[in-house]
Figure (cartoon, rainbow, N blue to C red):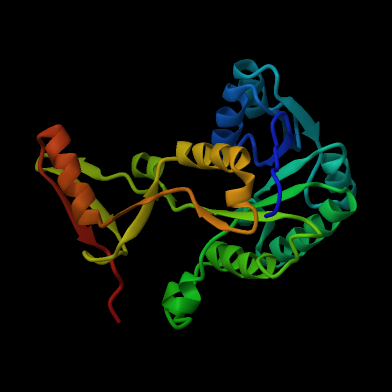
Length: 255
């Protein structure tokens, strides 16, 4: 982009700021003290919002919902930048399309200066749209990514931030079971299936970098920087760290 652009002291609104991904962004930006950070939340008295406010008292909270026009207009009022991320699992596939389209329109009307979208690559399309690879969450994000990349930058500058599977999930949904022989990872992946694994804090670091380098970020798809690993590699790493045997067993369904 022509000319020098600065977002120093910008007003940044974070969607999902009390959730896992959004919280990492709020933390990274608030620690710099270079931005005025706001979080959209349905309930600013929730335990998650209270914990965030306790750690970062300068963060402001906007109470409202991104599934209403009134909530979006109130949220975007007097903001410069939005980090837009919708909880697919709560909203559902059809409504995620609609409210992203509507949010973009209202962001234009609200004269925001930068629309930063939590997007994804088209893995499903690249794999021939085989039904066994269909994942509603990623499909919606990838299709909205393609749509946003075709919107004019002179109307509303945009950036797309992509990530991966949260590394923290290895201690929750993807955690191994432990028995007398050691640890066993079990899931439907193959031994050679490659997974983009990403510590949550990387979202915050990458967005912080983008805000400091708008000329290099606007109109681009930025990766938060995942590590590409297989589960046998993860098992080997766990074995090296713990000294206990660790292995991966695929639970892939056979037809």
